[in-house]
Image (tube, rainbow, N blue to C red):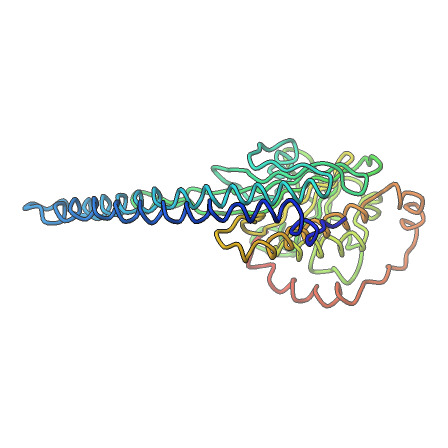
Length: 349
């Protein structure tokens, strides 16, 4: 499943984007005017503050910084609104072409609770969500949205918000229900105390114990670790072909540290990928590239939906579980594994 980029740009979306040029120009002009008049009003006030006959200490600096930030934000608001309008138009057109739905504003569901419970996302103090895509891919229900998680660090004047996760949370439905809870994490996530003695034999999440599963394929040894409450089913679920598709999905989202939870009748995936789906731009010449990037991301997700389609693979699951010989890994996946493994320790997830 891939959106028809050329068809979209040559059709209604292309015509609509052409009509937005006037809106973009108006937003730029309004932003420049706000910055200009804001500076005219701010400079005398700051001059008065800094030349007061008595000292205010660091207060002068903080007042000045806040005032300049307020003017900068006030001026940028028209540009932000224009980019959001273009973004919603582009993403909605892509979703319509794919037969799915897009909404900019959204709230998390049960999959987000699972992400927090089983450590797919780091601990944090506040969160926000946007860019939800949902519907059916390759006959399976899916739900995707972007999460931005922040942690409050420091104390006193050094207190600040730090981003600890920004990326996609994805839920995809399986064609059959399975009975285990199986977690695919990056190697080294769950080590024994002080990192001595290698990985743990088991981990617990809100009282739910998951035991370590021996690596399902030697090519992924040292890259991923598998934890489950059913060793047999885990080896069936974490099929090497699924792992390959997860890595392809990670690449399509320009992300890293993909991890997944198999539970109930779905797989929940978290990918650190930065700010995503920002297809809105103030430059019309960038529109085609941004539409193409979103189309590539969804093509990778559709490929993964096919890979985890238990309706297609269910007939041979038992046979694969009994097969002792590991399936072959593609040259691309084999080439990517060492390079990715080298960077895992830096992310911590």
